[in-house]
Image (cartoon, rainbow, N blue to C red; front, side, top):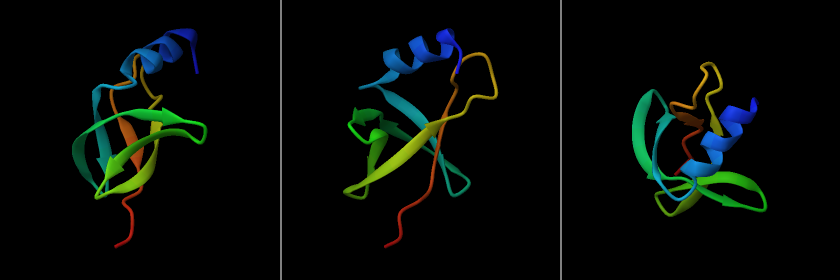
Amino acid sequence: MTPLQQSDLQSLIGKNVKVLMAGRFYQRVLREDSQGLHIKYANHRVAVKPDLNSLHILYFTALKPKG
């Protein structure tokens, strides 16, 4: 991860971001704790990873929780 992407990531914590889950985009608030980056989806903690294919972070990816 480049320093530019790290600064983008820190500025996005606590703000609405686009998350790609199961082929659909969702708008959720990005959060961070001791286990890493996550969002809340259906009252579950869902871990997310930034998409690092571009110079800036455009969206995050996550696996949809079961149930």
